Length: 180
Image (cartoon, rainbow, N blue to C red; front, side):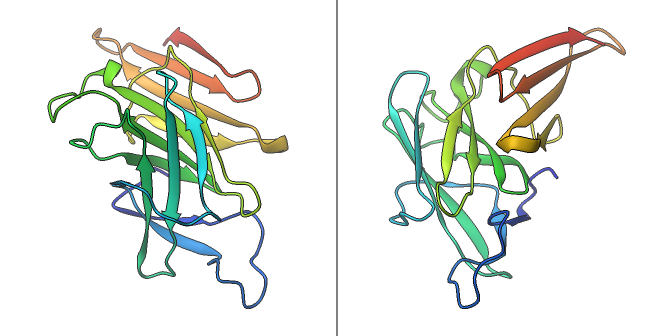
């Protein structure tokens, strides 16, 4: 399910315990906040392509109020908010702008991450380059057994009726491409 302005997503694969403070499902703001939220139960870190630490966490709220993602790194461009571009089950595909200034919207300006909302061990993984630039309408995220996932992005090539399919498999951490 592509992320819209507010997207419903389970906060984990497991049902919360009775009386748990973690909601079973949340609505997500797709536009995130550049900043730090102090929730250690949702916090995950990774390195950007430049080796800087990126910290991601959520302010979880019970529906109908939307939950908000917070992202912080010295590399993040504060002029272009981070975005959740796809969510399914406990996985979120995030796009963080690493360029400078409000007009830094080129392919090279973005890093993509997959956040896993596991209640015991949330995680964040940088998608290694080369990767395509994609919008929420061009990409799919498919959970697979064993905690793996596949990302597929379909991009225009500039030739009529010709597309380029980019596929990422988390178990090999590689992108493959082919023209269709």
